[in-house]
Length: 499
Image (cartoon, rainbow, N blue to C red; front, side, top):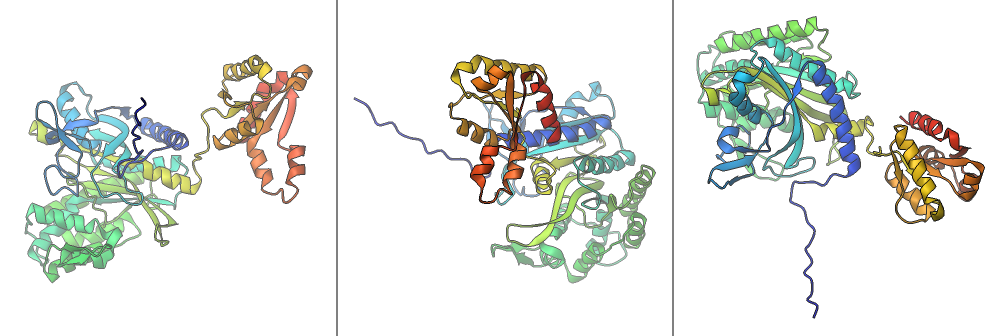
């Protein structure tokens, strides 16, 4: 007696995605281009585990109001709390602390891989996403921070993003701390200090400037504001004069790096930490200028904060400035795809002493989306661009020889293993992003010839076919017949043609 088999409903966790092969391949090509820039500056690869002890990860996420908030965590067999990493920097600090005596200093590494955060999913916002980091550990020199900005700029340009379509923005948390000293007093004399929790709350309110605007930031600093859903977000409840100081700071602008430094000087010159931050920015400016990186590539911007708690000095952000339409149909700039900063105290949690460090991270999926929008990457590139079709089942051995000949010549080729229907084979080739199909029947074999169908040209020509499509198909303008001995040469030319 047959029992009824219970069918399981196929479903996926909220905030997670399935990625097709063409998207994964496009991402790998982008990663290879980024890796080449990182290695050009002397960075070497590192891999760390996806799981870490929660106390080793630390809690630095902007969303984390509770010890286990913001991360996927559970107890292991020893009842210790472990979690999936939420970034690649916290695991790096643990690795450095464990291997400090064996590492060359400065230690310069890059790492790419998935990270996980328990966040509210939304358009373009996922709970699993890729990051691609580079970091310099063991150097307090602002040359390392300037170099990070150079790498961010060169990476974006290596991916085909033109100057004018991106900008690297730089600020310094120490300058912000100098402003906060004034906010603590509510006047221009400086010398005050805010509670660390209050200071962090102000920084995170400022960090929302791009999303809520200057008026929204003022509301967050004051009594609070309603978000898009209508929910009320309680404010910090600063005094009006304190809010005015923050607004004055955020409204400082200059077309030059030195101009912004001059404008900021009057605001934080009474603060020791503020002056230190300005001096670090001056050193970065000198290094950038010497390296040929002008303000059209790297600029100073007082509004850059970065949401992570562990930043201690310079912070930087790479933003794409071309315009797109968002999910609501509103025109806006694409925004941030790269970010980082200096975190001199992250390793200190383990060793009890400061180990200076700085670095930056790419939001891989977001940057890939931007490149796709700009037409800089193709998600139609097949791993094997050539399909050897099977027109006659009695010639299967010959088709296998053709596929092997192409592979031996360094050309990735796939022998079709499905149905004999040639129409379905062409359809498969088109859907899987092939560039060319090899077609040979008994007549071609007898003449020592093969036919090569240029799928990309066929697509281009078919756009202008008009009503006489049947006659166009019969003429096959995108198909050429060549001697069998010229197969490899002709296919190579076709692949070069379509890049």
